[in-house]
Amino acid sequence: MSNQHTSRLSLFTSLLRQSLRGDEHDYTQGSIRQAIILLAIPMILELSLESVFAVVDMFFVGKLGSNAIQTVGLTESVIAIIYTLGMGLGMGTTAVVARRIGEKNPDAAAHAGAQAILVSLLITIVISITGFVYAPDILKLMKAAPEVVREGEVFTRIMLSGSLVIILLFLINGIFRGAGDAAIAMRSLWIASGINIILCPTLINGYGPFPELGLKGAAIATTIGRGIGVLYQCYHLFGRKGVIKIKMIHFNWDWPLIRSIVKVSWPAVAQFFIASGSWIILTRLVAELGGKDASSGYQIALRNAVFFILPAWGLSNAAATLVGQNLGAKQPERASKSVLLTAKYNAVFMSGVMLLFVLFASPIISIFTKDNAVQNVGRIALQIIGTGYIFYGIGMVMIQALNGAGDTRTPTWIHFVGFWLFQIPLAYFMAKTLNWGPIGVFIAIPVAETAIAIAAWIFFKKGKWKKVIV
Image (cartoon, one colour):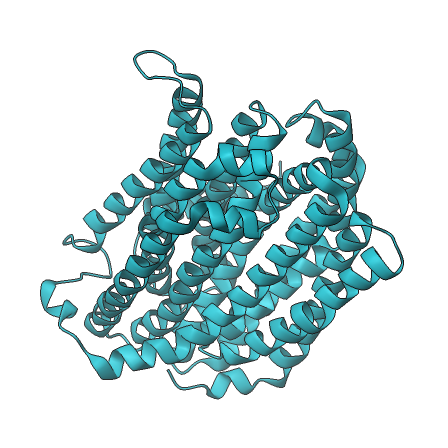
């Protein structure tokens, strides 16, 4: 090996260790490539573990039969709304915190994080009570079969009641990401996912002193795992180390700051809600047209799609942090260069995923179910969805760059037009008018995502995001 290659490997190894340790770093100075690596590695690993979370649940629940698979899939479709709130609040908070860190004002960043937590606590009280009371009705609304409602009611009730830990996990990690503390965000997801991986089979099957809880055990394992992840976050958030140090005084109500955070966050919430709402409608359409087998196969395909989308989303989050901090430091051109380089890396990664899904869909789906009918639908769905992965990769970086700048309104309009005015009508047209059934729904997904990526690229290149004040 040449000295040049040895030097590059040594540098990458050093950066890898630094990123995993969570050493403080000024992302507004020095090499952009190194800044991306330092932020992206823990962010990719963070969301890789979140994707493992989803796949592990489906793997063990898949052993319980198609009713259990459909229950988890339909419940997750609804919980996507809770993810939406957490991700939207987290994105708005990331933009504000990153801007304050770029301005070299960590106390103001901590104050913004504390105010965002107060907002999230108020929201989750309403969601948890509603989910606990109306769990069976929610499953019926999603067109679940009567036996699925009977078997899945407890699972849905536990998952929706635990919305507090879901939102806090996303929100607090948004605070850490904005501050550039990506390693802490990563470790919190590692802890949450690790505990879920251990508890899920234990509580479902009843190993050792634990009773066999079946589907209910999966919900308990997931909620406990996320809860412990949140406790770990709080330990560091209120500790004495790191860039962000939240104190009790930061929780004094600051209505002007709350309005500012909400102003940035609500379009981000709407943005994710639009995407999640489209997902729910497509899920319902597949269940309506294809029945239980099609719904189960589609859910397995989606879990695998998410498994690889989330790491790419982690790389996109690095772009959001770099944009926010560099705009705070009055360096818009450095922010722009960071986004373009991140998009290049994400496109390369997603190209590999596309080939994996197109060529190896059958063996991937067969890991999760032995039902031939479910396997067939899952294989077709994964292959079709996988064809758009290069555009997914580029589009999510552009969207996150705009969000990181605090321009959350533009991605919201892109999502509204792309999902609600294009994807949903296209899915209905191909599925019902052309009589293609669930396959029409599957085709609508990569077509719409490609259009969204192109629109996001156009708006990013216009550069209006560089002038947004947060």
